Amino acid sequence: MKKYLFWLALGLAAGLILAAATFLAQPHRLGGSVIEPPQPAPEVALEDFTIAQARGKAVLVFFGYTNCPDVCPATLGMMKTLLERLGTQAGQVQMLFITVDPKRDTPEKMHAYTAAFDPRIRGLSGSETELEKVWQAYGVFREEQPPSAGGAYTVDHTSRAYLIDPQGRLRTTYTFGTSADVILADVRSLLK
Image (cartoon, rainbow, N blue to C red; front, top):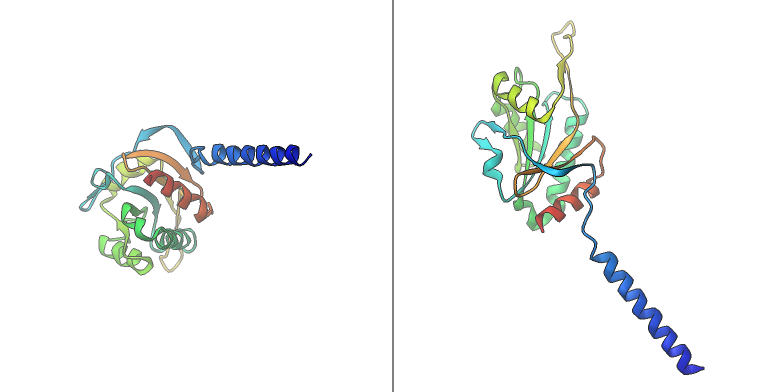
C-alpha cells in the first residue's frame, strides 16, 4: 500500500510540474485592441524625431494637449509609472505625447510639460499641416470646442494609446483607463 501511495504521489507531482511548465511556456497574449497581423506603424516626422529612429525600442504613443484637464495628465502619470516600473528596461522604451492643439502647444511648451512628468517622455508638436498627416495616419479624432467668454477652449480628442514593437509594427491600442499592469506586461513581452 505504501508503494502504491508513493507512486501515486510521484505521478501527481510529475503531472503538476508538466501542467505548470506547459502553462508557463504559453506566449504572452497582448492586452488592449490587438492588431493582427501587426501593421507597420505610421511614420511620425515631427521636430527632429521619427518613428524610424526609434527602431529597436518599444514605443507608446498618446495624442493630447497641455491644457487638457483630466485624460492627458492621467495618461502621462501612467507613462511615468511605466518607466519607473520598467527599471533598467526603460531605456528600451520611447514614450511619445503628440499634441492635438498646435495653436497653444509649441515645441517648447510640450517639452516643458512632459518633462514635468518625466524627462524621458518626449513631447512633440509641429505645424497643423505636419500634425494633420500624423493624426490621419493614426485615426485620431480631434475637435476644438467653442471658446468661453474668456477665450479658453478645450479640445475633444481620441484618448487611445498606441503600442509599437521594436520592429516598428503597430501591435495594440489601449483605451483610456487600461491598467498600467496590462501595458507593462505587454511592453516587457515585446522587449524579449
